[in-house]
Length: 282
Length: 324
Picture 1 (cartoon, each protein chain N blue to C red):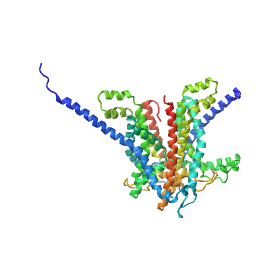
Picture 2: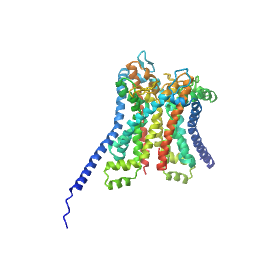
Picture 3: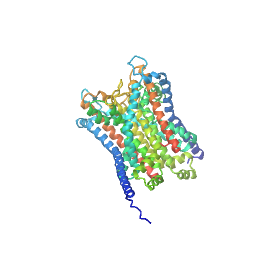
Picture 4: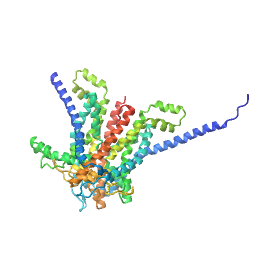
């Protein structure tokens, strides 16, 4: 039998280890942000946002087309993904325990865990292969496929928080079910649903793998959604694995811009819920 | 007393409204149901897309796809064993590194953290999940890989004398299985810790108080009363992290070295299924090559599907048992 002292020693040591784990777990993020700021800020200037990529060997240039491309892809993904995801979320909150509801819940979670490259293959098979060319639409669809399960689950969770008494009050006043759902339940949970949407956008904004076979990237401006389109993550990838120092610098600047976009959206998501419900909901 | 004039209009209007409501409800129900049906349809469509694209390779190459390590596009040989091996090993390395850290953080946050630290640390760890994988890759190439090559690998091999084991021997390449494992560990960490924290918080107070009342130290309380209660949930969290690690593409592609060889040493470069697809897809010259890549994708799809389904089931069981 161990002595009392030894047991307390062990307890103290293990608790100390959890403190150490907390420090070690926060370290990578701080390191990454530190390096991004140090290396990215140096090559970041106004021209980075306004000019096109320069050929190898020429310093300067920017990623204007990639930034616009990423915003375009996010826009397409939102147009497709948000209505479907929110609709499915409403279904789950209205019909909580139908067989369809159970399977949608489970399959959303499974979809959420699928590798993003699989979504790329899916969009490629259905949209790129038959069309014979890469396109912004295919890229947006792949991203939308990633958004749908996420938005579905967060929407449902937010709608569940709405007190049943609100719903009953509206029904008692003679509102039909659909109006109760839209103008009372959904409206009450709107901030939460917006948070879910923002979290989903933050997640897809930095996705690269599904765009490899769909949006493909483009050194120039795209004039149509049926053409390949540039995207910030793709551009960063291409530049990072290139052997040129100028391109590496551009990749760091691009990464700084990308992570700023993602962090701003993530923080906004946190802020929206906090102001409404008092505590963040993850 | 005059007779009240007949007023058929309001009644009709009311009836009309009820009728409207019924139609409105019906439309609303149909629209939301269709949205909900998109989710299962998506799963089916993804499965069909991948299996259809992979079929030619499966039927032509059969098992050699996963047993052979001979990947020679020119000769029409597609053995993806090294990629399969690399996916499994890099994910295993990631879990070995990430699991203790993630559970440590989760225990810290649920049991020991001062209240003012709980939010910020939890937030910082959660943010790890928001960092795009290409940013991890960039950081991996230019910061992590040089650090591993110059500091960590020589230290492990020569100072700790691990060089005599096959896992830490040989020349210290920069891009390596170890680099991939470390990056994946960082990426899987937030998922494991988020789920673990949730299930730890769900452990009833009485469980803790009972252990303390019996004279347990705080660590014994965690070990004997809290963790057993949360075990299957934590395992579910680890499986979720595993699912992430198995399918991660960009960050791994950028740091693993992309060499299709099986080597016991973690210092040597490797390949993963996802990076194989990402690298060769745009250069795929003939149909069989393309189909072989899709077959690799199909195997990856099936593995992650199973891992995720099991993970969700485990987490779901815990949260269902815990529903108060």
